[in-house]
Amino acid sequence: MINKLPRVFDKIKLYNSLLLIILFIVFQMCFSFVLKDLHVFKKAEESASLLYEFSISKFIIIFFIVAFLIYSNLVLKMKGFLYIITVLVLIFFVFPSAILFSNIRDLDYRIFLSHSLFFTIIMIIGKIKIKIESKTLNLKQSKNVLLYGILVGMIPFFVLYFPHINFNNLLLKEIYETREQIISSVDNFYTNYTYSWFNKTLIPCLVVFCLFFKKKQELIVAIGLLVFLFLCGAHKAVFVGLFMVLILYKYNYKKKANYFIKFMISVSLISLIISVVFNNNFLMVMSIRRTVFLPSLLDILYFNFFEENHLYWSETFNGVFFNYPYKHPHAFIIGEKYFGTIIWNANNGVISDGFMNFGMLGVFINSILIALYFSFLNQLNISSKFFGIFFLLFFVIISSSLTTVMLTHGGILLLFVSFFILKNSQSKMNDL
Image (cartoon, rainbow, N blue to C red):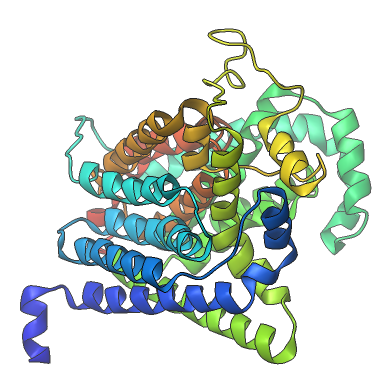
Protein backbone atom coordinates (compact mmCIF):
# COMPACT_ATOMS: atom_id res chain seq x y z
CA MET A 1 0.00 0.00 0.00
CA ILE A 2 2.78 2.43 0.97
CA ASN A 3 4.58 1.74 -2.30
CA LYS A 4 1.47 2.83 -4.22
CA LEU A 5 1.14 6.21 -2.47
CA PRO A 6 3.60 8.11 -4.68
CA ARG A 7 1.42 7.32 -7.72
CA VAL A 8 -1.39 9.35 -6.16
CA PHE A 9 0.49 11.90 -4.03
CA ASP A 10 3.96 13.34 -4.09
CA LYS A 11 5.69 11.41 -1.29
CA ILE A 12 7.53 14.39 0.20
CA LYS A 13 4.42 16.61 0.01
CA LEU A 14 2.35 13.90 1.72
CA TYR A 15 4.94 13.62 4.48
CA ASN A 16 5.02 17.40 4.82
CA SER A 17 1.21 17.50 5.09
CA LEU A 18 1.26 15.05 8.00
CA LEU A 19 4.00 17.09 9.66
CA LEU A 20 1.93 20.26 9.22
CA ILE A 21 -0.98 18.68 11.06
CA ILE A 22 1.38 17.70 13.90
CA LEU A 23 2.78 21.25 13.98
CA PHE A 24 -0.72 22.72 14.20
CA ILE A 25 -1.52 20.53 17.21
CA VAL A 26 1.80 21.42 18.86
CA PHE A 27 1.07 25.12 18.34
CA GLN A 28 -2.28 24.62 20.08
CA MET A 29 -0.50 23.00 23.03
CA CYS A 30 1.99 25.88 23.19
CA PHE A 31 -0.82 28.41 23.33
CA SER A 32 -2.91 26.52 25.89
CA PHE A 33 -0.09 25.74 28.31
CA VAL A 34 2.20 28.76 27.94
CA LEU A 35 1.50 31.55 25.48
CA LYS A 36 -1.90 32.75 26.74
CA ASP A 37 -0.34 33.46 30.13
CA LEU A 38 2.59 35.54 28.84
CA HIS A 39 2.68 39.27 29.52
CA VAL A 40 1.88 40.49 26.02
CA PHE A 41 -1.21 38.27 25.76
CA LYS A 42 -2.38 39.25 29.24
CA LYS A 43 -1.92 42.92 28.36
CA ALA A 44 -3.95 42.48 25.17
CA GLU A 45 -6.59 40.53 27.07
CA GLU A 46 -7.05 43.47 29.43
CA SER A 47 -6.82 46.35 26.96
CA ALA A 48 -8.85 44.79 24.12
CA SER A 49 -11.32 42.95 26.40
CA LEU A 50 -10.32 39.55 25.06
CA LEU A 51 -11.41 36.42 26.90
CA TYR A 52 -9.19 33.37 26.47
CA GLU A 53 -11.46 30.37 26.48
CA PHE A 54 -10.82 27.16 24.57
CA SER A 55 -13.83 25.99 22.58
CA ILE A 56 -13.75 22.35 21.56
CA SER A 57 -16.52 22.85 19.00
CA LYS A 58 -14.73 25.78 17.36
CA PHE A 59 -11.44 23.87 17.43
CA ILE A 60 -12.99 20.85 15.67
CA ILE A 61 -14.47 23.06 12.95
CA ILE A 62 -11.23 25.00 12.57
CA PHE A 63 -9.18 21.79 12.53
CA PHE A 64 -11.19 20.45 9.58
CA ILE A 65 -10.83 23.75 7.72
CA VAL A 66 -7.07 23.75 8.32
CA ALA A 67 -6.87 20.08 7.29
CA PHE A 68 -8.75 20.93 4.08
CA LEU A 69 -6.31 23.75 3.29
CA ILE A 70 -3.37 21.41 3.91
CA TYR A 71 -5.01 18.78 1.68
CA SER A 72 -5.54 21.40 -1.05
CA ASN A 73 -1.86 22.23 -0.88
CA LEU A 74 -1.08 18.53 -1.21
CA VAL A 75 -3.20 17.71 -4.24
CA LEU A 76 -2.72 20.90 -6.26
CA LYS A 77 0.22 20.62 -8.64
CA MET A 78 2.54 23.59 -8.36
CA LYS A 79 6.16 24.52 -8.77
CA GLY A 80 8.50 24.18 -5.81
CA PHE A 81 8.78 27.92 -5.17
CA LEU A 82 5.02 28.42 -4.87
CA TYR A 83 4.72 25.28 -2.77
CA ILE A 84 7.14 26.41 -0.08
CA ILE A 85 5.56 29.89 -0.02
CA THR A 86 2.12 28.36 0.62
CA VAL A 87 3.61 26.16 3.36
CA LEU A 88 5.02 29.27 5.04
CA VAL A 89 1.65 31.03 4.74
CA LEU A 90 0.00 28.09 6.49
CA ILE A 91 2.53 28.13 9.33
CA PHE A 92 2.77 31.86 9.96
CA PHE A 93 -0.67 33.15 8.94
CA VAL A 94 -3.32 30.42 8.96
CA PHE A 95 -2.21 28.28 11.93
CA PRO A 96 -1.84 31.00 14.61
CA SER A 97 -4.99 32.76 13.39
CA ALA A 98 -6.96 29.49 13.58
CA ILE A 99 -5.69 28.76 17.09
CA LEU A 100 -6.49 32.25 18.38
CA PHE A 101 -9.97 31.99 16.89
CA SER A 102 -10.49 28.69 18.73
CA ASN A 103 -9.22 30.09 22.02
CA ILE A 104 -10.76 33.57 22.23
CA ARG A 105 -14.46 33.94 22.90
CA ASP A 106 -16.47 35.91 20.33
CA LEU A 107 -13.43 36.75 18.24
CA ASP A 108 -14.20 38.43 14.92
CA TYR A 109 -14.38 35.56 12.39
CA ARG A 110 -13.18 37.88 9.61
CA ILE A 111 -9.61 37.68 10.94
CA PHE A 112 -9.30 33.93 10.40
CA LEU A 113 -11.25 34.31 7.16
CA SER A 114 -8.72 36.91 5.97
CA HIS A 115 -5.76 34.61 6.60
CA SER A 116 -7.49 31.67 4.95
CA LEU A 117 -8.36 33.81 1.92
CA PHE A 118 -4.77 35.04 1.79
CA PHE A 119 -3.57 31.42 1.52
CA THR A 120 -6.24 30.48 -1.02
CA ILE A 121 -5.66 33.53 -3.23
CA ILE A 122 -1.89 32.93 -3.29
CA MET A 123 -2.42 29.28 -4.19
CA ILE A 124 -4.91 30.03 -6.99
CA ILE A 125 -3.26 33.11 -8.51
CA GLY A 126 0.10 31.39 -8.20
CA LYS A 127 -1.10 29.01 -10.91
CA ILE A 128 -1.66 31.89 -13.34
CA LYS A 129 1.14 32.19 -15.85
CA ILE A 130 2.57 35.70 -15.95
CA LYS A 131 5.26 35.69 -18.62
CA ILE A 132 7.27 38.59 -19.95
CA GLU A 133 9.76 37.59 -22.61
CA SER A 134 13.32 38.79 -22.11
CA LYS A 135 16.86 37.72 -22.77
CA THR A 136 18.65 36.17 -19.82
CA LEU A 137 22.27 36.41 -18.80
CA ASN A 138 24.29 33.29 -18.25
CA LEU A 139 25.31 32.53 -14.67
CA LYS A 140 28.78 34.04 -14.90
CA GLN A 141 27.45 37.21 -16.49
CA SER A 142 24.83 37.45 -13.73
CA LYS A 143 27.50 37.08 -11.06
CA ASN A 144 29.69 39.73 -12.64
CA VAL A 145 26.82 42.20 -13.08
CA LEU A 146 25.99 41.77 -9.40
CA LEU A 147 29.59 42.07 -8.25
CA TYR A 148 30.43 45.23 -10.20
CA GLY A 149 27.02 46.77 -9.60
CA ILE A 150 27.41 46.28 -5.85
CA LEU A 151 30.93 47.72 -5.83
CA VAL A 152 29.76 50.84 -7.68
CA GLY A 153 26.64 51.16 -5.57
CA MET A 154 28.65 50.92 -2.36
CA ILE A 155 30.87 53.92 -3.21
CA PRO A 156 28.64 56.46 -1.37
CA PHE A 157 28.80 54.25 1.73
CA PHE A 158 32.59 54.24 1.67
CA VAL A 159 32.72 58.02 1.22
CA LEU A 160 30.13 58.93 3.86
CA TYR A 161 30.67 56.30 6.54
CA PHE A 162 34.38 55.47 6.49
CA PRO A 163 35.37 58.52 8.62
CA HIS A 164 32.99 57.27 11.36
CA ILE A 165 34.02 53.61 11.40
CA ASN A 166 34.65 52.17 14.87
CA PHE A 167 36.50 48.87 14.66
CA ASN A 168 35.64 48.12 18.29
CA ASN A 169 32.20 47.25 16.96
CA LEU A 170 33.71 44.06 15.55
CA LEU A 171 34.18 42.98 19.17
CA LEU A 172 30.56 44.03 19.84
CA LYS A 173 31.80 46.98 21.89
CA GLU A 174 30.53 50.59 21.81
CA ILE A 175 27.57 49.50 19.64
CA TYR A 176 25.04 52.05 20.84
CA GLU A 177 27.58 54.87 20.93
CA THR A 178 28.43 54.19 17.29
CA ARG A 179 24.76 54.18 16.29
CA GLU A 180 24.15 57.53 17.96
CA GLN A 181 27.23 59.07 16.36
CA ILE A 182 26.37 57.86 12.85
CA ILE A 183 22.72 58.92 13.16
CA SER A 184 23.82 62.43 14.11
CA SER A 185 26.62 62.60 11.50
CA VAL A 186 25.25 60.91 8.38
CA ASP A 187 21.81 61.54 6.87
CA ASN A 188 21.73 60.62 3.20
CA PHE A 189 18.62 59.57 1.27
CA TYR A 190 20.48 57.12 -0.97
CA THR A 191 22.32 55.26 1.78
CA ASN A 192 19.31 55.28 4.10
CA TYR A 193 17.14 53.66 1.44
CA THR A 194 19.61 51.20 -0.05
CA TYR A 195 21.24 49.99 3.17
CA SER A 196 18.83 47.06 3.56
CA TRP A 197 18.81 46.46 -0.21
CA PHE A 198 22.50 45.63 -0.13
CA ASN A 199 22.57 43.50 3.02
CA LYS A 200 19.28 41.63 2.48
CA THR A 201 19.16 41.16 -1.28
CA LEU A 202 22.11 42.12 -3.45
CA ILE A 203 25.08 40.87 -1.44
CA PRO A 204 23.34 37.62 -0.35
CA CYS A 205 22.61 36.96 -4.06
CA LEU A 206 26.29 37.46 -4.81
CA VAL A 207 27.20 35.06 -1.99
CA VAL A 208 25.07 32.32 -3.61
CA PHE A 209 26.81 32.80 -6.95
CA CYS A 210 30.21 32.69 -5.27
CA LEU A 211 29.31 29.47 -3.47
CA PHE A 212 28.05 27.90 -6.68
CA PHE A 213 31.15 28.81 -8.67
CA LYS A 214 33.44 28.21 -5.65
CA LYS A 215 34.96 31.68 -6.03
CA LYS A 216 36.66 32.04 -2.66
CA GLN A 217 38.20 35.45 -3.29
CA GLU A 218 34.91 36.98 -4.44
CA LEU A 219 33.13 35.33 -1.51
CA ILE A 220 35.59 37.02 0.84
CA VAL A 221 34.86 40.34 -0.90
CA ALA A 222 31.10 39.82 -0.46
CA ILE A 223 31.44 38.97 3.24
CA GLY A 224 33.84 41.90 3.64
CA LEU A 225 31.20 44.24 2.22
CA LEU A 226 28.67 42.92 4.73
CA VAL A 227 31.17 43.52 7.54
CA PHE A 228 31.64 47.08 6.28
CA LEU A 229 27.86 47.61 6.24
CA PHE A 230 27.79 46.37 9.82
CA LEU A 231 30.39 48.99 10.71
CA CYS A 232 28.22 51.63 9.01
CA GLY A 233 25.67 51.41 11.78
CA ALA A 234 26.57 48.53 14.08
CA HIS A 235 23.36 46.69 13.18
CA LYS A 236 23.84 42.94 13.72
CA ALA A 237 20.81 42.26 11.50
CA VAL A 238 23.13 42.97 8.53
CA PHE A 239 24.34 39.37 8.79
CA VAL A 240 20.86 37.83 8.74
CA GLY A 241 20.84 37.70 4.93
CA LEU A 242 24.21 35.92 4.86
CA PHE A 243 23.08 33.50 7.54
CA MET A 244 19.85 32.61 5.71
CA VAL A 245 21.44 31.96 2.30
CA LEU A 246 24.03 29.70 3.94
CA ILE A 247 21.40 27.76 5.91
CA LEU A 248 18.99 27.43 2.97
CA TYR A 249 21.54 26.92 0.18
CA LYS A 250 21.19 23.13 -0.07
CA TYR A 251 18.23 20.97 -1.17
CA ASN A 252 15.27 21.64 -3.41
CA TYR A 253 12.15 23.54 -2.36
CA LYS A 254 10.16 20.52 -1.14
CA LYS A 255 13.02 19.22 1.00
CA LYS A 256 13.60 22.71 2.38
CA ALA A 257 9.93 22.81 3.40
CA ASN A 258 10.28 19.38 4.99
CA TYR A 259 13.30 20.35 7.07
CA PHE A 260 11.75 23.65 8.07
CA ILE A 261 8.52 22.05 9.32
CA LYS A 262 10.60 19.55 11.33
CA PHE A 263 12.62 22.45 12.71
CA MET A 264 9.46 24.30 13.78
CA ILE A 265 8.06 21.17 15.46
CA SER A 266 11.34 20.63 17.30
CA VAL A 267 11.64 24.23 18.48
CA SER A 268 7.99 24.27 19.57
CA LEU A 269 8.27 21.03 21.56
CA ILE A 270 11.58 21.99 23.17
CA SER A 271 10.19 25.42 24.08
CA LEU A 272 7.06 23.81 25.52
CA ILE A 273 9.03 21.32 27.63
CA ILE A 274 11.39 24.00 28.96
CA SER A 275 8.46 26.29 29.81
CA VAL A 276 6.34 23.62 31.51
CA VAL A 277 9.07 21.63 33.28
CA PHE A 278 11.60 24.35 34.13
CA ASN A 279 9.27 27.37 34.20
CA ASN A 280 11.57 29.20 31.79
CA ASN A 281 9.78 30.94 28.91
CA PHE A 282 12.78 32.56 27.22
CA LEU A 283 12.96 30.20 24.23
CA MET A 284 9.17 30.24 23.82
CA VAL A 285 9.11 34.05 23.89
CA MET A 286 11.99 34.48 21.45
CA SER A 287 10.76 31.88 18.97
CA ILE A 288 7.10 30.81 18.86
CA ARG A 289 5.61 33.85 20.55
CA ARG A 290 7.56 36.44 18.60
CA THR A 291 7.58 34.92 15.11
CA VAL A 292 4.30 32.98 15.02
CA PHE A 293 1.69 34.27 17.47
CA LEU A 294 2.53 37.92 18.08
CA PRO A 295 1.80 39.02 14.48
CA SER A 296 -1.56 37.23 14.67
CA LEU A 297 -2.35 38.88 18.00
CA LEU A 298 -1.53 42.28 16.49
CA ASP A 299 -3.90 41.51 13.61
CA ILE A 300 -6.67 41.15 16.20
CA LEU A 301 -5.78 44.50 17.75
CA TYR A 302 -5.65 46.24 14.36
CA PHE A 303 -9.05 44.84 13.38
CA ASN A 304 -10.35 46.02 16.76
CA PHE A 305 -8.95 49.55 16.52
CA PHE A 306 -9.60 50.30 12.85
CA GLU A 307 -13.12 48.90 12.62
CA GLU A 308 -15.10 51.69 10.86
CA ASN A 309 -12.01 53.87 11.32
CA HIS A 310 -10.01 53.18 8.19
CA LEU A 311 -7.06 55.28 7.05
CA TYR A 312 -7.54 54.94 3.27
CA TRP A 313 -3.74 54.99 2.80
CA SER A 314 -3.58 58.53 4.23
CA GLU A 315 -0.44 57.68 6.22
CA THR A 316 1.40 56.64 3.06
CA PHE A 317 -0.03 59.37 0.80
CA ASN A 318 -0.87 62.03 3.36
CA GLY A 319 -3.04 64.77 1.87
CA VAL A 320 -3.33 63.19 -1.58
CA PHE A 321 -6.74 61.62 -0.95
CA PHE A 322 -7.26 62.01 2.81
CA ASN A 323 -5.37 63.65 5.64
CA TYR A 324 -3.73 61.34 8.18
CA PRO A 325 -5.74 61.83 11.40
CA TYR A 326 -3.09 60.94 13.99
CA LYS A 327 0.00 62.65 15.35
CA HIS A 328 2.11 59.49 15.45
CA PRO A 329 2.57 56.52 13.05
CA HIS A 330 -0.03 53.77 13.32
CA ALA A 331 2.38 51.32 15.00
CA PHE A 332 2.88 53.76 17.90
CA ILE A 333 -0.87 54.40 18.14
CA ILE A 334 -1.57 50.68 18.58
CA GLY A 335 1.30 50.36 21.05
CA GLU A 336 -0.05 53.19 23.19
CA LYS A 337 -3.67 52.01 22.97
CA TYR A 338 -3.15 48.34 23.86
CA PHE A 339 0.23 48.14 25.59
CA GLY A 340 0.29 51.44 27.43
CA THR A 341 3.37 52.96 25.83
CA ILE A 342 4.00 54.74 22.55
CA ILE A 343 7.49 53.23 22.27
CA TRP A 344 5.90 49.76 21.87
CA ASN A 345 6.27 49.77 18.08
CA ALA A 346 3.40 47.44 17.11
CA ASN A 347 4.13 46.94 13.41
CA ASN A 348 1.48 45.17 11.37
CA GLY A 349 1.64 42.73 8.48
CA VAL A 350 -0.04 42.88 5.09
CA ILE A 351 -3.39 41.52 6.33
CA SER A 352 -3.97 44.08 9.08
CA ASP A 353 -2.38 46.74 6.84
CA GLY A 354 -5.10 46.06 4.28
CA PHE A 355 -7.86 46.17 6.90
CA MET A 356 -6.43 49.31 8.50
CA ASN A 357 -6.55 51.12 5.18
CA PHE A 358 -9.73 49.86 3.51
CA GLY A 359 -11.43 47.19 5.60
CA MET A 360 -12.02 43.74 4.11
CA LEU A 361 -11.67 45.18 0.62
CA GLY A 362 -8.20 46.34 1.62
CA VAL A 363 -7.38 42.80 2.83
CA PHE A 364 -8.52 41.46 -0.55
CA ILE A 365 -6.46 44.06 -2.46
CA ASN A 366 -3.29 43.32 -0.49
CA SER A 367 -3.82 39.57 -0.88
CA ILE A 368 -4.23 39.92 -4.64
CA LEU A 369 -1.10 42.08 -4.97
CA ILE A 370 1.05 39.73 -2.87
CA ALA A 371 -0.33 36.73 -4.78
CA LEU A 372 0.52 38.35 -8.12
CA TYR A 373 4.00 39.12 -6.80
CA PHE A 374 4.67 35.50 -5.83
CA SER A 375 2.99 34.21 -9.00
CA PHE A 376 5.38 36.26 -11.13
CA LEU A 377 8.38 34.99 -9.15
CA ASN A 378 7.06 31.44 -9.43
CA GLN A 379 7.17 31.64 -13.23
CA LEU A 380 10.83 32.69 -13.30
CA ASN A 381 12.17 29.23 -12.38
CA ILE A 382 14.60 30.57 -9.79
CA SER A 383 17.06 28.15 -8.22
CA SER A 384 16.20 26.99 -4.71
CA LYS A 385 19.75 27.99 -3.74
CA PHE A 386 18.52 31.60 -3.60
CA PHE A 387 15.53 30.87 -1.38
CA GLY A 388 17.17 32.34 1.74
CA ILE A 389 16.67 35.79 0.20
CA PHE A 390 12.96 35.19 -0.46
CA PHE A 391 12.58 33.71 3.01
CA LEU A 392 13.75 37.04 4.46
CA LEU A 393 11.22 38.89 2.32
CA PHE A 394 8.46 36.59 3.52
CA PHE A 395 9.23 37.44 7.13
CA VAL A 396 9.02 41.13 6.30
CA ILE A 397 5.53 40.50 4.88
CA ILE A 398 4.48 39.09 8.26
CA SER A 399 5.35 42.27 10.14
CA SER A 400 5.33 45.19 7.68
CA SER A 401 2.86 47.11 5.55
CA LEU A 402 2.74 46.43 1.81
CA THR A 403 4.38 49.71 0.80
CA THR A 404 7.16 49.16 3.36
CA VAL A 405 7.75 45.64 2.03
CA MET A 406 8.01 46.79 -1.56
CA LEU A 407 9.97 50.01 -1.10
CA THR A 408 11.97 50.10 2.14
CA HIS A 409 12.70 46.36 2.34
CA GLY A 410 13.44 45.94 -1.34
CA GLY A 411 10.47 43.94 -2.60
CA ILE A 412 10.47 45.77 -5.92
CA LEU A 413 14.26 45.56 -6.16
CA LEU A 414 14.11 41.80 -5.60
CA LEU A 415 11.53 41.56 -8.39
CA PHE A 416 13.93 43.23 -10.84
CA VAL A 417 16.91 41.19 -9.64
CA SER A 418 14.86 38.01 -10.03
CA PHE A 419 13.72 38.91 -13.54
CA PHE A 420 17.01 40.13 -14.97
CA ILE A 421 19.56 38.05 -13.03
CA LEU A 422 18.00 35.01 -11.35
CA LYS A 423 15.53 33.99 -14.07
CA ASN A 424 15.90 30.34 -15.20
CA SER A 425 18.73 29.80 -12.71
CA GLN A 426 17.00 26.60 -11.56
CA SER A 427 17.74 24.69 -14.76
CA LYS A 428 21.16 26.32 -15.12
CA MET A 429 22.18 25.24 -11.62
CA ASN A 430 20.67 21.78 -12.13
CA ASP A 431 18.60 21.64 -8.93
CA LEU A 432 15.28 20.57 -10.43
